[in-house]
Amino acid sequence: MTTMTNTRSGLRILPALFALALGGAVIALTGHVQAAALHDAAHDVRHATGFPCH
Image 1: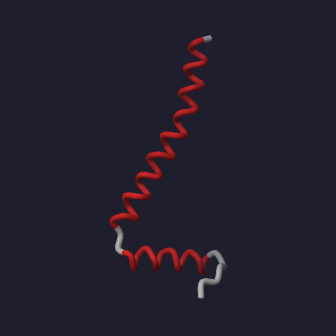
Image 2 (image 1 turned 180 degrees about the horizontal axis):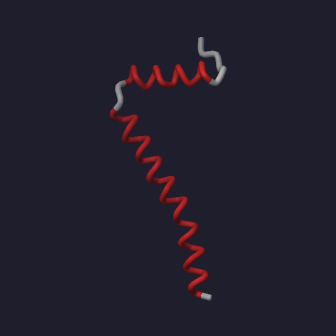
Image 3 (image 1 turned 180 degrees about the vertical axis):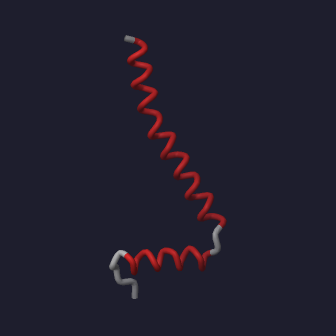
C-alpha cells in the first residue's frame, strides 16, 4: 500500500508544481514587457471578448 500512497501524493504535487511554474513564467514575462505592449494586449483581449473598455 505504500507504493499506492506515494503515487497518489506524487500526483497531487504535479498540479501544484505546474501552477508554480506557470505563475513564475507569467510574472517573469510580464515583468520584462513594455507597459504599452501589455496594455495594448489587454485592450485587444477586452474588445475580442466583447467587454467595453471606454
